[in-house]
Image (cartoon, rainbow, N blue to C red):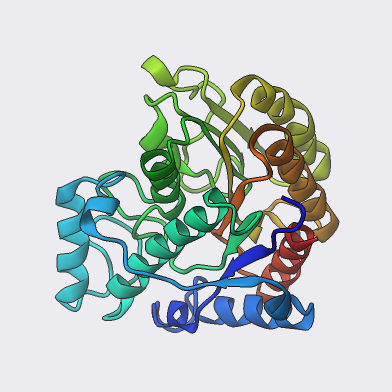
Length: 315
C-alpha cells in the first residue's frame, strides 16, 4: 500500500490518567512523545485516529468479566491503586483505559480496511502486563491483545504476529495467547527483572506450543543480542507463520539510559527493528502493521526513540 498514509493515535485525553507525583508512568510521557513527533513534522504528515470507548464485550475478548468488574469498581470507588496489583489509578483512569483499548481497535480497523498502511498508537496507560484476570505493572487493560482479538473477530485475521521489545517481559500478552496458537508472540526482555517471567522454556502449551518465543537477556544487552534476534530468528519464524497482521508492543525503556531498564539500544537500533518489522509485514500481509506504545521512562529517551520509530513507519 505505497500510497496509503501512516496513521497516528494521539489524543490529550491520555494525559488524564493521573499516577501521582514522581511516578515514572506520568502524563509527561504523552507530552514528550507529542512534542517529538511535532518537531519531526509527523503530526501534519500522518492520518489521525480518533479514540473510542471499548465496550465490555470487547474487553472480554481478552479479560475475564470478573476482572473487568473489579477494575471498574476499584477506579470508581476512588482507589489510588488497582486491588489486583501495582497499577496506580485516578478518577479518570477508567475512561482513559477504555479509550486506549478502543483507540487501538480503531487503529486496527484503519489498517485492516486499507485506509492506512500502518499505525502508531501513543496510548496511556500501557497494557502488556495486564493478564486476563489481573491489572499490574502500570497496566489496566491489555491494549495490544485486545487489538489482536479485534482483528481476528472483525476481519478474520487468522494469524497475528505480536513482538514486544519493551525491557520488561510482556507477561500479560503471553498469558492471553499461551494456549491459543493463532498468535505468534516474541519478546526480548531483561532478566532477572520485573515481572520475572519469560524464560526460554516458556514456549506455549497445547495449540500454542511453539508460538511463544522468549529471549531473556542480562543487563547490558543491546544491538548484538536484540536486533540479531529480530533479523534472524523472528524473520525465519514469521516466514513459517505467515501473519495476517503484524503488531508491536513498542516499549522504549529498552533504550540506553532508561531509569527502569538496563538495556543499551540506541535510536538507530529502533530504526533497524522497525525496518525489520515493516519488511516482515510487507512480505506476509500487505504491510499491515500496528504499533502500540508500552514503556519508556526517560522523557528524552522516550521522545527520541519514539520519534525514530514513527518517522521510520511514516517513511
